[in-house]
Image (cartoon, rainbow, N blue to C red; front, side, top):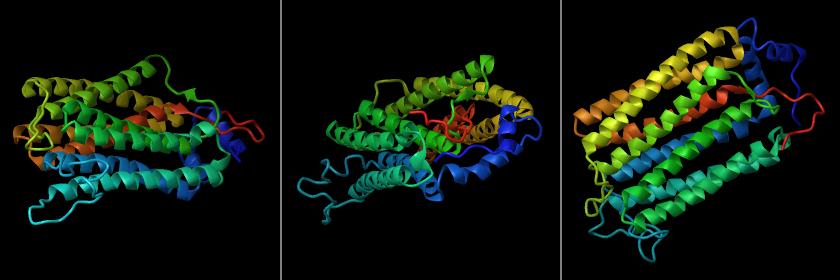
Length: 342
């Protein structure tokens, strides 16, 4: 059952973190075990890592031209679930099948997380809406598997491949949000920003969506089609779409820097925003790294290894962006005996 905050902790919450800026954060760390078991926490982390990992392996499939290494779906080859070795076999079927296998690993982790979240205390007694999040993750994994099959049968059309990537990024965002939500209380969500601060963060989120969508279009117009014999690409000028993506990145980073400065000022007065400040700091570092890789891959002619790193960092950026959004809200603990929200 959900536990109530101690008088000292409730006092800190009521005062919006007045006093030591690290006190509520320390209280959150101390209270986490009363809100989520170590097993559930580790499974939630494993779920997020695996969601980003499958983006990396998907990038590896693309840059090695292994997208049609398995010519069928759900079988790898007609009548065979796994690749069949023969003298003419290349490495492509094994890379593609490895990526498909990771989808199964994601499903296993999601099922284990659901079981632990619904049948172990203290999460068993937490709101149903919270416990439903990994159910949606599992549904998303199933949808991803189907989209993967459509991708094969559509001969890696960039529109289908792009949807495949968007779904992965969405699952990364949901998985990151779940981690924040598990640590938080179960009371009504309170907006810690409001006004211009909330508008600024919303603008950051909007540009994050535009940036990632344009990034996927850039990949769909570039040289890495996923298969050398079916190089379907968007009929766009790669340089023009790359510049559009770059402008979206510049806008995102500019707004993020402004938001980070604002969060540093607000967190000095309201310790409940320390988590949001940390998320913004991490996001700035990730964006610098992502920008450096993006500039390097553009100047070096899109080497395969940099494309894979760029995709992996994109998953990390989406995860931390979701963390930033979630951390600008705060849910206090419910008083003892209070009814749980839906």
